[in-house]
Amino acid sequence: MPLRIGVVDYLNSRPLAWSFRNGFHRDIFEPGFYPPAEVAVRLAAGEIDIGLLPSIELQRIPGLRVLPGLCIAATHEARSVLLVLAKPLESVRRIALDRNSRTSAALVEILLADSYGLKPELVSTAPDLDEMLQAADAALLIGDPALRVDRSAYRVLDLAAEWRRLTDLPFVFAVWAVRTGVAADGLVSYFRESLGQGLEHLEELVADSSRELDIDSAELRSYLTDHLSFEMGATEVAALEEFHRRAHAHGLIDALQPVEVVGSLLPQP
Image (cartoon, rainbow, N blue to C red; front, side, top):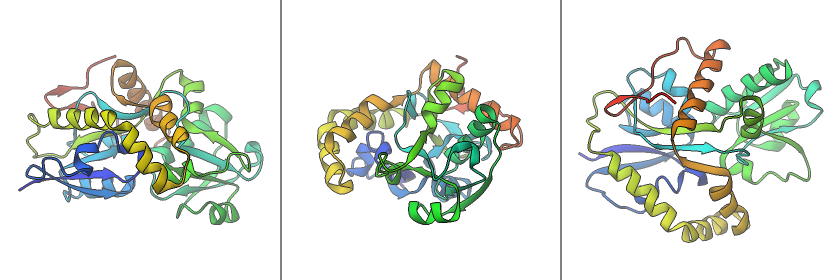
């Protein structure tokens, strides 16, 4: 039977998942499209075989392996992971978190504590900015809803930019992860091919997404090419390990485990 793939249904995944979204290799892969948190739930439950997984979940779901060299990372600003403020940051006591988030929910807690000495109350809600800011002093939005935020109307913190300021590293938001029991040694080439095709068809992808999201195509092109990176090299490995270390220090993961890739341990930076 085809391997079940969990794809995050946001624009930032589309270059990585181009082949699967466009029906290539249907005899091998069966894609489903979900919010990030649901990908994690389904992968942990064995309902999918491979998922574009929130990076925090590599330390929470046992037995996962990572497909090497691929990720969703932000080099400086992410633009799609925002803390939207209704009052000055130092006055924030309650934050509404987009319930679709796992990694960014951990990241905002780490950043507020390590950069600002803040530990606000965190509540999980639907990603509706008006309702979030009625119930809290700030709102965490991720993915396509964050891209639609009117930055002229709100003060926002871009979490990837805050992470870069704190650590001088990029931030790795998601990786392709394979669950225990799935033979994956021959799969890497399909996923690299998918990214290659996504980048080759970038203008088509941008045009389609611009119509769908009602966002200017130049802004989306810059988002995908200037702000995001899809290759996981030594710097991204170091960033991922630093995130996991800080998450463990804040009690957001129980124990630090070596991250395995298909065929070996994740190489040291």
